[in-house]
Length: 415
Image (cartoon, rainbow, N blue to C red):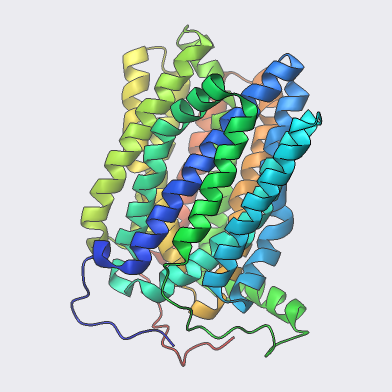
């Protein structure tokens, strides 16, 4: 049963749940960025920039999403979310220290396990966090809450690469991995402060019905026009983002005539704009439907991606990257808010588990084909195609722009 909310709910920043989750997220982001750059730089040094060895890092990070996202989402709906999140962070910390011992005694390939195990556990923890978010944050503040999370992600997109590079170059691999283990442990301790779970664990009540629950997540998404359209938008956005990310380096070297190092400045401009954009959306979040936010974000992405593919001017490209970053939070916030508003509390984990792999899966697919596309077509053509995919994603939102979120009272849609 969801707690009663007053007509005028208190400020988001006074919400104990949100305070705790944001602090936990800060710790996790520190660990993730230090881990990502430590592994990337270490593998590059160890293998002399072997493309295959470096690509295995992405496989270790993304493969668990395909295998465990559906399963993790289903279990997240059956288990107590607070307990699940604490256990996941604790087990991540334990696994990190175990792998660290293996690395210390000579098995450097174990670095891949750090990303792999952490990615698996996140598939259980992340949907549990979404369940608690829907439970503890008033309906009218969901979109503002998502905007705060987007702002946090943007901060680390700017600071994360610098932090990760600094820690690895100053202290080395083992200390970097140890930092990740410590912050995951600290995150688990912070999560103890979360309000007690009042959602009943379903492990006993529906024992033996895992397959039914698993299938129910797919059926729930398919029966909702809004969630179906959102899934299609996920696929189109994933295809577009994947190919653009994979070829951004060639935009820098071929279209702009700059060195590879210039890419970090493009990313920093984009990340800084995302931080500002997240703040702007947080202010106006209550007044704009999430479907419209998503459509605006994808339409702007279509225009900006196409211009970047044609531009040979550094000032123009950086301006467009800033504009794109400014509006990109609309996509993330719109998607997250739609999942929360159109999903009953008892099935949020499974809906997230069904939709999330669509984006990541298509992103990985388009990344894998990016090299072949680069050999066959010009950058302008490829980025125009990515822009068209974004445009189609915006058009997908048109039939559902005026739909209102259902009233998920405790008696509604029992799963």
